Length: 239
Image 1: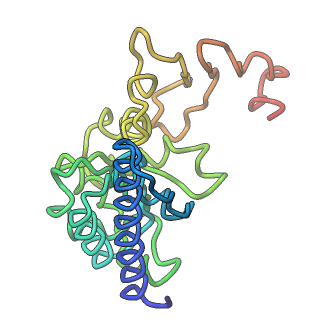
Image 2: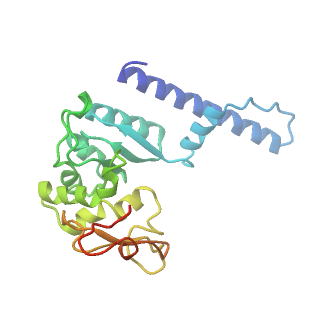
């Protein structure tokens, strides 16, 4: 389909097909358990995957942008009781934040990315703070292999535009991301028993002049600035 209406119609039909597929297999297994001579249904790997979604075995991270498609998706998720856990990009989520709040859905979004295509025209840098005010789990992300190395700078922008606390902003690139991925029991914050994945900076991480001087992955030093400095005046040497 070339329209949002067509895309959602196709999605809904696929979910209906998956529901029938799941019910067909449930009837088959019940018949076998009762000793009946039943014919095994033909396997369909696409519908089998969607059936696992309907059963709550596979969570959904939906790529979206504008408010209308977010609301439509929420309606479909409610109709089929889907395990919708994340809305990625979702640049107009702030317009329907009251519809998202309280559903346990994380919003993975940008800070000041705007105007690069039609769906991004109404993107605003105030969104992360507006969503956080509704107790929505907000994660700052980037599609850029370059910017992703400086998410601390992106988090600093949230403080500038939304006036939230530095701790709240840092959470958007640490523990909130772990919650969205459902691995917060292992990483995302500095606690006893968690994987020791740490980045150590030479000043406050939200300071635009800060430099990462040491990184640890599972407790092992992966990078240390001392290994790369070639002397006074260098900026980290080899990279």
